[in-house]
Length: 139
Image (cartoon, rainbow, N blue to C red):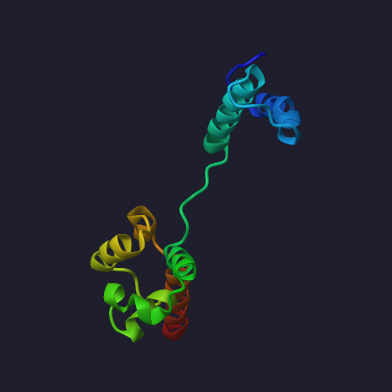
């Protein structure tokens, strides 16, 4: 058993090659091969988290995903966001989330506040489009 840290892409590929046979025939937990497999998976996971980080989702995508998971409709967001028209403005990116909305969505739906604080890609697109219209109108 040769276990060493994964520092680069070559080490990563070698580690994947070393553990690939264990995926087809997983060793018993607690055995020498089982311990090797478990430690290598931890090393590979740590390297992947560092080398291939996954960013937080867009706030609107996160809200929609959580609504789908819970079988919710937009009207179910009223206690957290406000009246139906405000809910639709948020879900289409026409209105940004307020701190109060973020707190309520976090507490009620369990969506991480770090995700909800991010500017939405949808609202950024709308702001760019409206800025372009203002420039065209001024010209």
